[in-house]
Amino acid sequence: MSLFALGLNHHTAPLAVRERMTFLPETLPDALGELTRVRPVQEAAILSTCNRTELYCATNDPDSALDWMAEYHRIAPADIAPYVYRLEQPQAVRHAFRVASGLDSMVLGEPQILGQMKQAARFAEDAGTLGALLHKLFQRSFAVAKEVRSTTAIGANIVSMAAAAVHLSERIFGSISSQRVLCIGAGEMMELCAAHFAGCAPREMVIANRTLERAQALAARFTGPSLKVGAIKLDELGDRLADFDIVLSCTASPLPIIGLGLVERALRARRHRPMVMVDLAVPRDIENEVAQLGDVFLYTVDDLAQIVDSGLESRQAAVVEAQAIIDARVANFLQWVQAREAVPAIRALRGHAEEMRAAELDRALRALARGEAPNQVLDTLSRNLTNKLMHGPTRLLNDAPSEARGQIEELVQRLFPLHDHDA
Image (cartoon, rainbow, N blue to C red; front, side, top):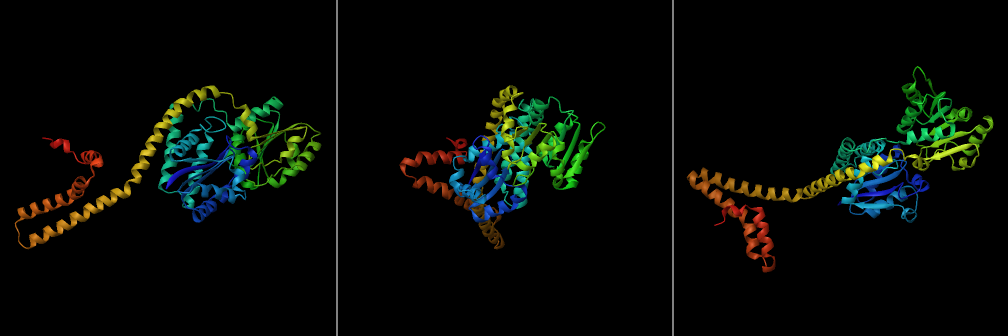
């Protein structure tokens, strides 16, 4: 059984492919359970974000696991084959450490992925698919990410997706302060976006969500003396969309929630004043056809990658330093894996020795009960134990073929401190 990282990301697959492979959070426990039930996978965790869908697993059949991922989404395995990667143990560990540290992100050094990895580990633990190997992998990944962030400049001048959304909006409108902003969704990404836009003190800001209570709770976090943040239900979107100049959306909906017709009606009501729409969801929340409208500036997560150059040079300089840390921690993890693989043999060896000890102790106790001299009993006990413990190595040396004798003698020299007794 080996450790694998299987999947696709923004480096290997376009958005149109990535969104077809996304796992919704509420489906993950059942999906993980199904995977380990129907495929030869002993441990599994799924990391699914807007930029990647990755399966970390312990298995002897990674191809079967990849086929399951495709079939789960009703995609022919051959259709995703050009986009997927299959990383085995050393490469898989290095990849996990890089992902957690923000080195594999669309925005170099962004911190959000670490929280997403922690959530993936929690989902796997809740589903009962996070075994000892993956538990250790994720814990080490979190520790490496902390070390990289605290000892290098990888986190300097971070340009997050949320900050990039602000930057794009400012390109169109010049200032956010006179604009009305609508945030659709109440998850972690939208919370980050709301924080960034609230900091710009827009003219109006509203949170829309399927559950009004969640929208109100998020709105309350950013309401202050200079900004009152409102909350509406998602089904009010048709009546309210025209009110907003900037629309940000990031929900877990499997289908678009903003269609072409809805935006066309909003533009007519706005008398074709421009709108900035930022779709941070995967699968997308806004129909792709909306981008063809002349008064709409529609951006997706892939478009945001074009504006993350600010601070990139200093973060790239830290990559070499961060990679050195990761390489050292990968070696440490692989040593732990190797030691773990030896555990069954160590247990068997100790069990064998314990059986011999118990047998000789029983024989010695029976001899004492018969009245034999204690000194003689102890001497016999020690000799019998020595003979039994030395029987295996002695026989191996005696029976060794000439071409292997040197290696066996070297092994015995390493097992026992024979150099201490050289003549």
